[in-house]
Every structure is written in C-alpha cells, then in structure tokens.
Image (cartoon, rainbow over all chains, first blue to last red; front, top):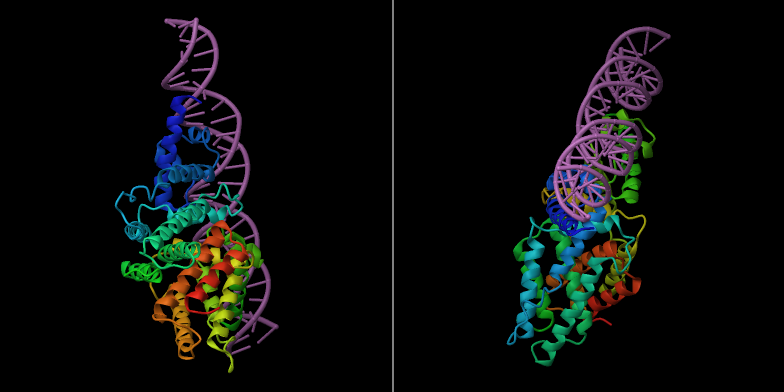
Length: 194
Length: 194
DNA sequence: GAAAAATATGACACATATGTATTTTTATCT
DNA sequence: AGATAAAAATACATATGTGTCATATTTTTC
C-alpha cells in the first residue's frame, strides 16, 4: 500500500469518527461512512470490510492520542492533590459532555464485541492503566502527607469504578454538574482532602 | 380492548423480553418478535408500533416485579449489616450474570432514548429509589452501632455509582467474581465493617 | 345460528443496507 | 506518449426490514 493509500485510510478513519460521535456505533452503516467521506461504495470496501473494523481503527487512533492524559498536568511544582484535582476536572468534563464524545459508541461497540481478548480491549487497557496512575499518585500524596489512605490500589480502583458509574448514568439518565461535583467531593473526602 | 387482548399483549411482552435478553435492544426487529411469538406481522402491529414501545412495556413489567428487592431480605431479626450484605450479594450476581439479563438491552435502549423525562426513565427511578433504601439502611446501622458513617446519603449514592461502574465494566470488558468481591469488600470497609 | 364486531393473517409495495463485479479514471514507469 | 498497474466509481444482485391492506377467521351479541 502506497503513501497515498495510507493517507486515505487515515482520512476515512478520521471522518468515520465524526459519524460515530454523531450516531453511536450500531446505527452507523457503511453507507453513512461512504457519504460522510464523499467516496464511493467500492472505494470504502477496498480499505475496510465493515463498520467494526473501522471503529477498531478509530479506537486505536483515539488511544494513541489520549494515553497522555496526565502528562500534561504533571509539572515540576505540582502536588499530588493538584494533579488529582486536574484529572477529576477533566473527567467531569468528559462525564457531562453530551456532544463530541465517543462514549456511547464505545459502549455499544463493546456490547457487540464482548468476545475481544484482553489485549484488544482498549477500554479495559485504559481502565487498568488509569488505575495504576491514580494509585501512584495517591502513594505520592500519602508520602507527602497530602492524603491519608490505607489501601492505595483499592482506592484507585474504587475511584475508577465511581467514574465509570457516573459516566454511564450520565449517558443513560442524565446527570447535573452539581451531582458530579458532589460525587467527586465525596471521593476526595475519603482520602482526607478538603 | 377485551380480556383476551390484554392476555395476548402480556404474552407478547413476556416473549419479547426473551428476545431482548438474547439480542440486546438495537438488534431486535419487529420481525424477530413476530417470529418469537409465532404470530403474524399484522397481528403484532395491532398491539405495538415499534420495538421501543414493546421494550417500554418490558421495563414496566420488570420494574413492577423488582421493586421489592429488599422486602424479601428484611426480616424481624435481621441487622442492617445482614440486609446490606444480602443486597450486595444479589448485586454481585446481577453484575456477573452474562445470560438471562436485560442489562445490555436497557443501556442500549436509554442510549437511543436519552430524551425521556425523569418520570419515564425507569433506570433513573430505580437508581434513586435504591439510593434511598441504602441510605435508610446505613442510618439504621449507624444507630445500632454497626456502621460508622458521617454522610449516609453520600455513601449510599457512592455505593450505587460503584455498582453501576461494576456493571458496565462487567458488560464491556468482563469482570471476575474476585474483582467484584474485592470492590464490594472495599465498600464495606468504608463504613467500618469487617 | 346469523349478523356484527373484534382479531388475526400473509402478501405486497417500499425502503434501506450489503458485498461484488465490471467499468472508468488516475497514477506510474520507461 | 503509450503501456501497465493501481485506485476509484458505478451498477447490480441479494438480503433484510417496515408498515399497510384486503381478506379470512374467530368471538360476541342478540
């Protein structure tokens, strides 16, 4: 495959992303993507067999770009509290965001593909990596006397489950910014922060 | 509508439930339900316009039957701890259950209908009512010296978010019984139980 | 037990999506 | 420029789903 093809494939994936953001996963058809990309039916089939394959590429691109959620917020003089607060603030935005999010499509995709191996499950990988980062962060905070926490790993996992819970409730039932704040405050109080 | 019609409608809803359990929400067509019920196309359309309408009925039936989650476990001599443990055990089953569950269909349905009013959103109603019950339970536990808890309402809500998180993670990425246990233990420790 | 009303049926017209095979266009090489 | 290869477009055959309507069957009513 030539350079041109690589470019076009990327173009398709990026354009398809918008379609998935708009419609979720299941409702998207090859036709939708053909039209969004303004290419021909046969043209798309030259690169992808179905929407699952395309979505998998979208996720791959996505995970490459979002792997450094924390790296932006980690500066020399930032404390663990600072970084955690920043992270939670980002999460809050993500939880409340209605438009311009892949959240729903991602859930739908995994509903359809709960046969994926641990390796191929980007969602799981991201969850686990986030747990590790939070755990590390709490540990540092405990060392510095910012936090009080017996079981850093457990707390980190717990925080991630709460965030997942908030996300799905927000998607299915709606959630006010206040409700999210309240919950995030609750989390922070647990590790002894005001 | 005669008695016979009421019966048939109920039959359709109950049969459709199985289809939704099997296939989730989005993948289910009127045709699927027609075939499952072994009735005619026109016959089904006599009762329902589309799958959303049918699913709404399934949910209604469901919520009528499951409103008394706790009532079974509340006996004269049961302590708050007993009841909470029993509830969490039930939840664990629900979280891990792969077959015979509407969980996925419910999520899919609300993804498609996030325009539902607070009243019509069974998911939300159930969440809120569960929070209330747990809160009450914790309060009783605190009075009896079984639990230590400053903010019963907050804790109750937090527990529910964690349960939602576990549920969605289980559905999308898979979760081991041990992982669920670990998390439930974590919850219990927070309110001072061994 | 015949007429009327209520239910149920299945074929049909329409719509939308899929995947492929053939043709057309565009790019590449000498 | 002309031959060849690669990429893209289009038309087609197939499949699946929707909603309706004329017809048939069952049930109710008198």
